[in-house]
Length: 519
Image (cartoon, rainbow, N blue to C red; front, side, top):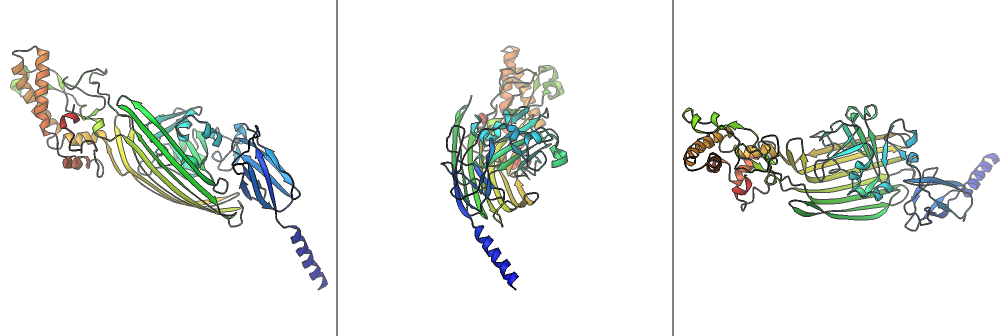
């Protein structure tokens, strides 16, 4: 009985010596400027960060070893053995080879230990980039090219795998696929991540199918977000500028906010919100390419096929359309249908709204187990440029819910993604549907040919052949185009035939004159 009591007393006595004490210290950079946001971590997994004055505080059991780190800087360690010990550390910039990455083998490792080629953008790189945002900065990485389909829709290409879509390329946010399910490809950062919440971006060029599946044949991009345990506080950013093109100078702006709070060592949360609004590139090149060489001519030229005009591509010889008794009375020239300018098929506005909220729970107050719930919602309007036409994608919607259990050597996650392409249409099909509403394309060309023959034989009596063709073209075009739809309700009906309900913003305005729309 005495032995049992003695053991209990010894345990109580040792516990009294294991009481936690409060320690504090300072962290500076190489220029002795207070280092804000440095991560201070014990070997048991307890973490904190330095404040704006480079000072940190935490309660620990002595002795303790502290590891102080920050993205782009060499990690420093210090052992604290007694209460009141002065702690002052200097973090020095490090080589990127010492940076820790996750994407190479799905486990933390330094870049120079990685079995594959990998590029990385850290917090320091993102802050220093001259690009509009961190996603555009990826284009500055060696071996990377970026296809800019529009202000928001961008495609990363590596090692020669270049096209407008790059289907065999995987984009992940915190390890979760960011693909748009209807198109089976990521839409740049239109439905991605708030720049204020980006901790690092890792890029693996080339095939990575063994780790990320068959779609990772052309490469992988992994965007890692900041943990509210390590990065707290409120961050606000506002970017603004102008886009300049022939149609004029237009402003764009991108405000964003991040709010994160660490309640204690077990629970933390964050929310992110960002907006984007800008003017898209306006496709207003109307040069004629019917001969294979761009020419500065207009619609009065028979056979006209404008660069950014749709539904005027098909050429038919005039003699093939007139009646047999008129074949010898008209010139042998190609003619095309009246097309519609690209600028009247879209409002050319790029805009997006992005919101996400995340809850983090650590049952034991360290990184041995962390439970995370994240919900993301985004809505965006933008254009997509394919090889031969453009697509308007309005009210595209992205929603994702994630539940993850992560430990020091394992993770289990499940997520549900819902996407909707919203109000979308192919500009070529939209123009063709509008033109064919009241009369089929070939029937209308037949009407055009008949009127052209009539007017040509009238004008040739008092004008040169070239002048007679131009005058007959104008009269015949005006006569046949009366069969092209003119009511806004009918536009909606015809454009619905390509996908779901669509709208053509400029065409549907009552004040727009039909002579402005067609060329």
